Amino acid sequence: MPIYERISAVVSLSLIGLTLYFALDFPIETTQFTLFNSAVGVNSPRQWLMILLLGGLAIVGTDTVIRAHPSLPSQRHDYVATFCMLPGLLVILATQLLRLAPNSVVWIIGLVVVGILLWFTIIIELQQIPLDPTLAYGWRRPWQQLISYGLILAFIMLIYQTRSRSAMSATGIALVSMMVAVTLLRQKPATISKTWLFAFIIGLSLGQITWVLNYWRTTTLSAGLFLFLIFYGLLGLAQQQLLGKFSRQVLWEFGIVSVITLWVIFKL
Image (cartoon, rainbow, N blue to C red; front, top):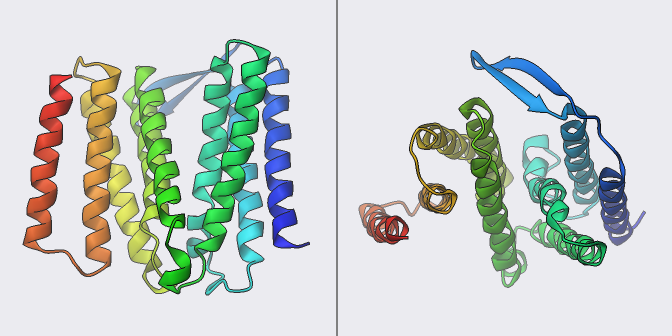
């Protein structure tokens, strides 16, 4: 099957899955379990299972598209996985945002927008496979960054505003941060292990900070922007390190920008 037909199949199946998700009537029930020695309750576990399945469908579908590319430099699972994170997160986010539609017309328009964004996101990931910088960047990189930063900010806001237990909210933000970070930090197959390490550190850092913020009374906007700033700063430092350009000057630049931005955030 040609690559573009595979992309169409992934997008179509994802949209069909989203439609079924909103058409199904999930039973109201609560499941209790222990996470990190903390009792946690999950409302409508079948609904959340469906959400994870939809995200997994987008990830697996994107994986089949990426592996079909003739210029893929490596079939390593840890390298190919970095191309699949954004589509999965986009579909999961759609399950949370489409339910806010005030009527069916807006919902249908939103579903179409999700399909368009999903299509272009997979295309952009696909076109960043060649290692030649003249082919891998250009307008593709800004689009990837726009989608990535939009996803991480939206997820942080959505998760934090639930005010759920830290075992859930901090873990969720940590996982999403790691998935987005590994996409933006991706360089070459030879450095992919270091890329995953930096992404894990960024995710762990965001999770720990979220844990602390849950004990601090602040608005969702302020907390979300603060976490996003931390993510942006850590990601920038990690990128400089991976590129071999990390220096004291870079550290000062990020530090000054972070302090100014923090001052603006706390003035909101």
